[in-house]
Image 1 (cartoon, rainbow, N blue to C red):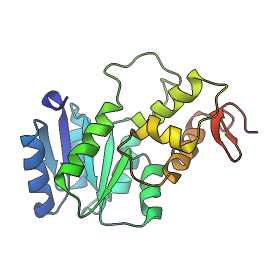
Image 2: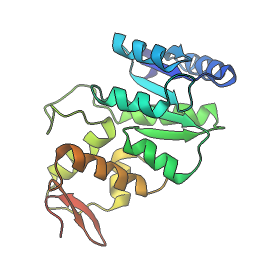
Image 3: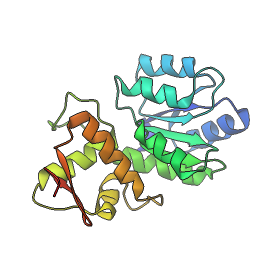
Length: 206
């Protein structure tokens, strides 16, 4: 998988940027780097990037703002990297469109595993899908496709975590609530229903 994938690493700390870039290159990725938000946005606009690792605290534009800018026009996978360890910060990152979130300090091996997990969730091609004209993240598309293909089934949070993140996910199950909230804003409140005490289904709430 890694041989043809390009990773953009955005961080203004050389002691993070350099080892991350070097390690990912050894893993077979093509690696681009940026220390400023404006440079990162220019690289994204140029195209050819498969996934972005984005520090939240940059000298010119915050990582949160960069994520919001990208999400206006692209579903480029984004993994946020930050020292903000509070659950609320992680949920906010997911709310604004991040696909995953790693807290500093992190192991390079774990970071590579997170990248592989996000990339595995991407389709090899873009098949016709519901809401193809709406900018959904890769994670959001996984959730929409799972729910819509089995509209009579109620999915628990744990099941949707496996659908969206795979078995590698070790975060809070509230992450699913955040993605559902984002999806309702994009595709309509009545599209994904809540079955109280059980989970979510395609259709109206019960």
